[in-house]
Image 1 (tube, helix red, strand yellow):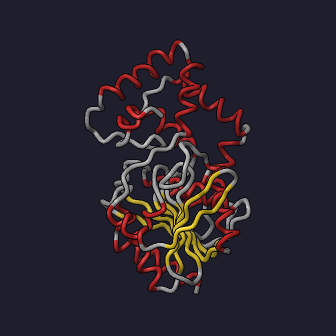
Image 2 (cartoon, one colour):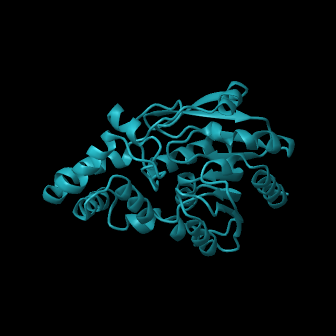
Length: 301
């Protein structure tokens, strides 16, 4: 993705994102004009561009807390196909795997590390392809699921998996393709890919014909059962793994109803609502961390 476009949309998450209420920069307004007006006349041309953008990842600045915990981590490279995936780990004991969201990074687990270590767990957090220090500029859910499988081969079956946002979708798919965990904590996860497409199209103001073209391209690459095959809601219906689903009522990136759908579909899952934490700060909230760690400790025993 061109640097100017990355900067224009850095405050608006393409995968399920929502505008922040401020006037968009001129560069983003130009892109929206192209997708809305030119896309109406040349849907295939703009659909090809949208398809390229759909897989593009973006790296945002790392937080101070994230930088600090990575300095104290054991750092390893796990080769997944042609991608050298950066993996950070802390402590010893049963593994709690953290899976970050789109445009995130493994160090976002920072606030959970000390409580999990105190509870006797080892925390393992990869930077998915095209994220953090793992090279690349694009990825997809299937590639990310392969990373989790490789992590399992290297570190053993996880006692628990903790996910944020898109990471929950990756986990649900991976657990239906051989990934094992005694329990899972899914925070602010989207329920299905259609929601992500809608958010993506809204952010870039795509003409409906461009969206249709984009969907056809995705179906051609991943086959027509693509939507159901990667749907978090569909995948969790097949799971018996105990789960805690957490979502904030003020999440403007992934509305809380998405989490409610996941919890309703996941047999025996618990659903926890929070208030005023949004999509990102929920990962630093002491109450959320306490409930999540207690759930993992109680479930794993």
